[in-house]
Structures are given as structure tokens and as C-alpha cells.
Length: 538
Image (cartoon, rainbow, N blue to C red; front, side):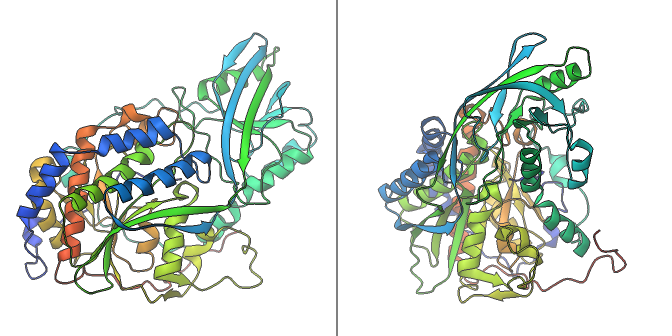
């Protein structure tokens, strides 16, 4: 679901600003054991290979995701972890693509690169028709195309040519990248923007209903990236909200060719075939948990997590078999070393992240805090929970709110850890600097106050839980692999994942054994609008 920039361009706190009163010595002897186990006996790539090469793309509630849920639990058990279990939450239909094809048949024949859009139905065989380029991005566009779409394959994207890239698609962070950057990113609370977002959430359903009522045969969109990359992302997974029409995504270059021909005296005709399956045996999605029990006689725990689900265009390697394999490897390392932490260490593999960070939100809502319900007459009561979560006040902490001492997340691809985002928590900065010090020679040095978004620590932060996302080298994550058809095992960097697993294990052990819990931010209350004179949404 996410399209986030790696949060390295942030305010980095100088070492001179450390506050020794908050710091606590790191057990470097224990870290020696973690480094040895993580470098000389690593299994992180074997784990990643099973999730990608063997299982493949793990779209939520698909057969592949069910296989991943079972296999990861068994791995945790085989490594000797405790309390291995799942927690289900209501999600919707499972979906998987069987096969698809696209072919231009006039003015000449040409096979095109295509992928079904997730949770859209199939075409029920091959359909053949002329195309119409009808860019539709909002309900107000419907009137322009009313009466013109019957019997057509509708091309709903505007075929704009994107600017040439000005940066290399693959890169690592430099010292300048890590030490420079903008100011502290102040929060912005805009009720009007929230209202516009809630209204926009309904557009996919409205578009499908309009196209079906107009007699369109199917719709196609243009890939969000050039270079033949495909994505296939879609979000109409709820029971009872399955679209009526097949939706497909064409490679950008193929889409633009059709659009150009549509303006000539030889408009193209197109053959489409999409065969998909829906899986309704169980509408719940499942988060996976495993633990190393604490010995301190407390209910407190620390947690590491990554999302196990992916999209189906490829094998979901950098997004996010990489993070899942690192979390699992951290669990294996610590269990192999026989650590006996003061606090329990819990490992989480989330589901439904790609559809709106749903798995970790379900955990927050069940165990940590909830929010006031929507009013009975709210027009947004039918929206999924993540659409309205942040706009509901007040926050209502649950009994277990104070038990979760810290959560560490990994979900920015395969790049090595270069530091951590402190998420605005100035009290945590000197502690994290102390914890990173043993890994300076491995490239991990930076503590940033910047807030990072778009992944599974977010909803913890929104209710005052110390949740953190690591800073990683970007590699080609945002430019090429994120959600795309080339996100396979070859995009993973073994040396980077080994380093990440070592740092993850170390942070977990430090947090579990620290005398005092990590300092917390205040539980948020409804903010004052940043612009007190902002006009409401239309």
C-alpha cells in the first residue's frame, strides 16, 4: 500500500547532545554472540528464498498467503520459540490470478504486457473490442463520457509521458545524505484534507458502477512506472463489494501506443483475457506471533515486526519478504543464543499491510487502544476501519497499553540499516545512539527525529506506543521493485539482510533488558487545526 520515501533526510541529533542520564551501557559481549551467529551461521537468505521462490506472491487471504502463514509458524516452532499462534481479524475475500493476456489485433497484431488488477473479476474468456481513451479520476468526469462507452474497453488513465529520471535507479546513502536534511517535520492537522480523503475512498466503487451501467466490457489503466513494470494493485476486497467489471493494467509503453493510435484513422482493437479465482473459505486474515518469554516477572514486552503479505505481480521479495526474513532471523539468533531477557520479546508477521496496514491496526485496536466510534449518522460508516481511524477522537487506551515497551519495524526493502527514525521522541535519541554505537563500522550511525509513515509502526505511534522504523539504504526499492513485477529474490542483498538481522536482534535485546522502559510520547489528543482559517472541504 505504501509509497514512502526512505526517512533519512531528517534532523540528525549530534553526539554532543547525548543525555547520559538516559543512556545505559550496552552488553557488548552479548552483541559479539549476535554478530557471530548472524554472520557465520545466518539463515536469513534461506528464509527469504522459501518465501519468494517457493511460495511466491502472498496477497492477503490467497492460497499463497495461507501457505506462508503455516510455514512461518512451523519455522518458529522448529527454532524453539514459545507461544506461536495466530490472531485473526475480519478482512474479506481471497483472490489470486491464474493467467492473463492482452493483444492488439488492429491495425496490426502485437502481444502486450498486462496484469489483472487485484480483486477484479475475470473476463470469462477472451473479449475483443475497440478501445476508448476516457480518463476518469473523479465522479465529476462521468457526465463527459456518459453514452459513449457501450461495448468498449475503456482506457481510464491519462497517457501522460513522464519526465526522464534524473537520478540513478540504484543507490546507497552517503554520509552527506545521513548528516544533511531538512528541519524537524512539524505535524499538520487539516480537517478539510481528512474530509476529502474520506470522500475519495469511495471512488473505485463509483467508477465500477458507472462503467458497468454504461455497458463497458472492461477497463484498463496505465502502469504507474515505465520500463515495462507492472503492479496490479487493487483494494476492493470486501465481501459484497466485488467489482462487476474486469480491470487490467497495461505496461506504460503499451498503453501509450494504444492511446496514440486511438487519435489516428486506424484506432486499435484489443483482445483481453483475465482468469482469476476468489477464495471465500475463510474471510479472516491472520497475523503470526512467536515469543521468547521474559524472566523478570512483568507483563511488559518488546516487539519486532514486518508484514508477510505482498502483492502478486512478482514474489514480494523486497516488499516485504526481506523484512519478514530479518524479523524471523532475529528470532532465530536470539533463541539459538539462549538469551533470557527481562521482558518478553515478541515477533510479529503482519497480514493485510498492503490493503491499509490492517493487520497491525487490528492488533492495536484489540490489545493497545481503540478510538471513539463513528456517529450513527456518519456517511462513512461503511468504510474500512483504516479509512476513519485517525479522524476519530478521543483515543481510549486498553489495559495492555503500557505493556508494549517498544516496537521495531522493517519495511523499506533489502537495504542495510543505516540508523533509526526516533519519530519525534527526543528522549529516545541518546538511547538509540548508544545502541547503534557497536555497529558504526557496519554503516549504522544515524538517529533521526523525523516521523516515517506508510507501514506497521504507524498506528502504534498514533496511540502513543513507542513504534520505530529503521532507516535503510534505498537501493532500487522506490525506483523499481516496490509492488512491481520484478520484485523477486534477485533484488535481495544477502550482506545487507544479515547486517539488518544483527541490529534488529541487538535492539530487541537492549530494549528487553533495559532497567527502565523506553521513554514514551504523550497519548495524542485531538489537535488544533494547523490553519485556523482553512475553509472546509467542498
